[in-house]
Image (tube, rainbow, N blue to C red):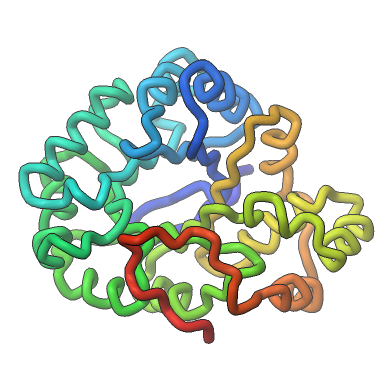
Length: 277
């Protein structure tokens, strides 16, 4: 049975396979490995330049299309009306799909009127380009503003989140409005796996450190994690987290790893981030 998160009409598998930095044959193969392992949520983006490879894997796999939740994203310089729709249509063409399950604004644009960005997103859903729509890298204030402008349900906000980065503020905003919070870089690109507390819990549970951290993610209300790996064994391990649980004390010990400099993804075009709770 696959863990899922319900969010404003969407049912989203709580563990997805991230494809950032996977390209061509490697991407195609790893998506197939992920599907073989039981992943039913695949995350890509126009900016990843791998939608063709993802689409090939989806097409060639025995899993029916309707059983796979596919997410893609529109880059922040393509959010004007018209540009947004063209970007989404091009993504669908590369993926070989008539519709994605979730279409996201990849980053909010600092240069395009905010209401136009949200209007373009909602219009894409009205046009049938996506079953559901949402945002990515939105702060709590931006999410509040998006909810005011949106005339279609928003189902997810995809953000950087791992034990080093306290995201309670944006998580609370997502919960307030019924959105899932989808966590990218969920194991902090591997560095958190070497933390003593994580290794101790992993040893006590007879689990890998990555499994412990991913369990920490999905035990939080409305939270989805999308780990990425190019190692087939780790891909299989990362989804094998349903038959154990962390205690509240263990959850707190892992959350206690948060630190002021925990953010790893902070490009020039990023919004002004929420302060830690």
